Image 1 (cartoon, helix red, strand yellow):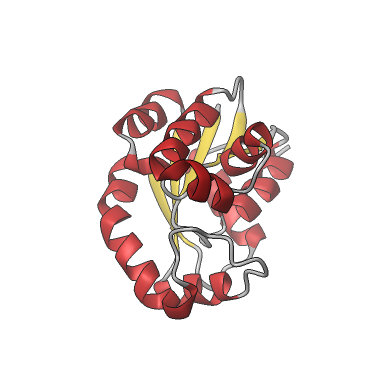
Image 2 (spheres, helix red, strand yellow; image 1 turned 120 degrees about the vertical axis):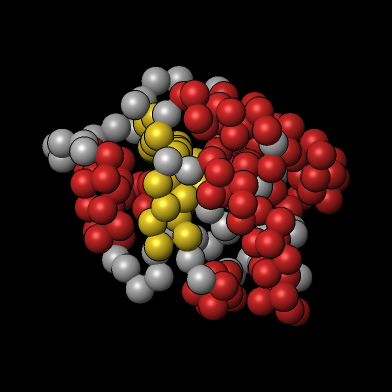
Length: 170
């Protein structure tokens, strides 16, 4: 089974994905890491040198390169492409990790490299809100399940996912 984790940047997709893959003993994939490895430069540099349109194209390609079962942390903007939303629906179980804007702001403010190209770090909350408003319905439409991550441990989130999908913990 493919388990897709979607949500805003900072919602915990990578952290939850790594932990969940350990719990259920299937591989973990992070589409952002896959495309950075393939391109040889950071996401910020891809945006700067090749543009967002190119980034979204390779984001979709990275998603589809994953073979077999796995927990897949999808880039926050992956839901923007209709082909990706259809892929989520047809190829696995999709979980929207939802966090409040204040939680997202707190997590993103701690970014050491400040490398999220669509965020204005001088006004993170306003920037996050604008991105969220564009994506919120797409997250909801794409998801089989929504889990609120505010004030929850990774273990609690993973246990909720396992219970909701009815996966036997290994």
